Every structure is written in C-alpha cells, then in structure tokens.
Image (cartoon, one colour):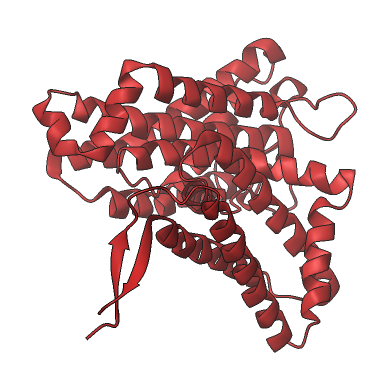
Length: 352
C-alpha cells in the first residue's frame, strides 16, 4: 500500500513555482553532466563550454536568435492546438510543405520583384502548411481518427515529398550530383537586418506572437477556444463552434510552421535541400510544454532551446560528443520540468 497520497493544491504555489522550475533545470543539467562524465569527458568543462558557446558572445547570441525563429513559429502554432487539447504532432511535415510551397513560388516566378515575390512565397508556404495540417483535422472530425497518429505519419510523407523534389524534378543540374535546387533569385531571399546577421524573419515572430496573444485574450473566438479546451462536452452543449475551432487551430498551426519553412529555405539556405529538416517541428512540442503554451514564455524557451543546439555544435567539435546527445539533453530538460510542474500543482501527503 502506498505510503503517500497525491493531493491537489488549493492555492497556486506562487514564487515556489520558479524555485521548482530552476531546481528541475538544475537536475536536468546535473544528469547531463553525469552522462558526459560516463563518456570520459570533463562534465563541468563541457557544460561551461555549452553555455559559453551559446550565450558568451554577440556572434553566439545571433546564432541563437537565428535558430530560435523557426522553433518559435512552430511552437506558437503547436501551442495553439494544445490549448484546444488537439495534439498536432505534425509541425515537422508542415514545415517541410511550407518550404516546398515557398520554393515552388521562387522557382516558378524568379523574375518578379521582391515586394511581390516574397509575399507570394509566404502565401504559398502558409497555404501548403495549412492544407497539410487540415488533413488530420478533417479525419478527426469526420472519421474520429486519432490526430496524433495521423499528423505524426504525415511528417514522413511530407519529408519524403521534399526529398523526391530535390532529388528529382527540382534538382539543380549544376549541383554536381548533390540533392538541392538551384539558388533562389535575389528577389526571393529574405534580407538581413542592417548591421547584424539576423534576418527579417524576426518581424514575423513578433507579428505571430503579438497576434496570438491578442487573439487568445481579447477575442470571442479566443475565449471559446479556451473554453472548449477546458471542457469540450460543455462547450458543445453551449453551442460553441467546436468543429470550426478544430479546423481553425490546425490550419493556423500548419500555416505558422509553413512560415518557418519559408524563412529557413529563403533567408538561411537560399535554396531547398534535405538539410533544411533539422527537427524544428519536434523541438516545438518540447518548447510549447516547457512554456505552458504562453506565447511570451514560448519566445524565452525557444531562445534557450536554440542556445542548446548552438552549444551542442561546439561540444561535438571540441569534445567529440555524439550528435544525439543534444536530443538527450532536450528530453531530460522536458522530463524534469514536467515533473516539477506536477509538484507545482499537487503535493504529497503521508498516509496516517
């Protein structure tokens, strides 16, 4: 018979939640250091190198912001579906289709001026991502299919479609056999913010974050979305448009992932190639949960997870750490913070 029982807290933990969060983060880093030591690497030196490489210089901070942009866009969209308790696990495939849509526009209309071509690329990326996300939504509403499984399986289909195009019809004849499209025209490349290596995709992040906050807090649909997420049966009884909200959150989530694919192909690579798939859609799930689905906290968590990716690149080069170690650290951080969130909402009481 268990010695303890779980009791829900009657009042929020308040500032104690911050202590629990940082304690969970400390335990995750401690476990990561222990894994480094098991590989024969100096644990403290490795963690310090990771932090310094990610946040120790202007160049490193710019790298973090560049990588945080696609993570943030995917995370905001994923977090929106999670609020409705619709589990969109397909941001990776929607990201891939967004990149494909933007590339199609760039390759089809290379002579257009940038003020026409870039908005059209963004529109095509949004449309492709939204349509790809609509598939699991339609199947859930019409056939009661599990959107987790459908959206997850569509990731593989989307990635394989991208690979088919860059290995086949869109392959650049002058690429010496490497799978990639020809370089985008100058008008199809998102420019950099003057004096930095950052691109104007940051403006899209600000637009998406502010728009999502206003939508959730000040609009009727935002209120209905939160209500349906709390209790879908009660919301249906109150005649709230549950089916419409499911389609809305899934298509918006897919469109935002499509934005991320557009920026990665246009601003970062200047073409489409398989290396564009870096797992941003899967990282978005971790970020959304770490941030408790709050757009502001999603921005912070995106930056920190991007820093982890930047720091891991230095660990791989300087200490010969396996590339999979970054994924292990992400998982440890997520598990520790989720466990800490449990103790923020519940407490253990010893049985008499």
